[in-house]
Image 1: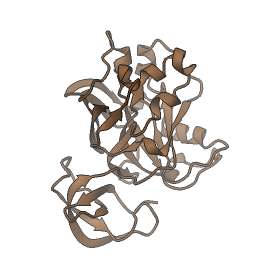
Image 2: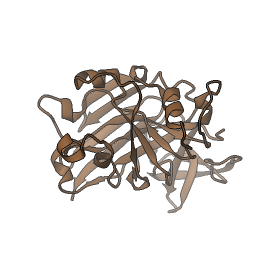
Image 3: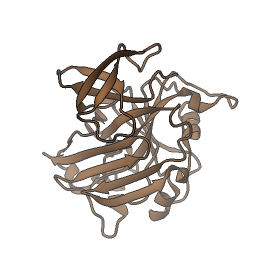
Length: 279
């Protein structure tokens, strides 16, 4: 489906925005040279131009998204730390397109969001072609464009039952509450998304670490469930859930403060780093 392997979207030193291939084996993209595409590699038929550009700023690998789907309580360890039962079906919420942020952007946090701010490091799946009502014989991974790193930024104040009536979406849907990146890795490079390691750090201190084989509902199950009666459009981002170690369940809770930097890393994909900017 995809023409790329490790797609990076970036601003070059000439001020223009390009899609290119991220250099192999390098997590430090700024200052590196990238082979650029002559057309949009998110669409069929794109090819490398033969030209190279120097990466000056790394942007979100997707310029826009139609919608984010989030999956709640989807790691066994996370359910255990909250004393919650394993759900029968995936717990689903959405984020709007304006929740999208780049891999190194500051996250603006306005009052009263600032009292109970939390991080959720996540593996993200990007849909590559329309999918609806998958038959049992179909392979859901055939509809995946690639994988990226995300942080499901959450305002727990708006998630506790007194404010939310038990619903997740509003607490997670504010502008730039879904940074993703730094690159989009194709299914050719990652054929099995259940064999990755996710780590989240706050100001350099490790808060979360797990392998994605701890997911309750794996990527194929999630796609099959979300596509039931609903068309998943190309560019849709699925945030597959967060492991144990979120600030809310630490004893005592350790919520994010102004200036805190959250770093989420998934091996074979890369690292995103976002500072909380209370405004």
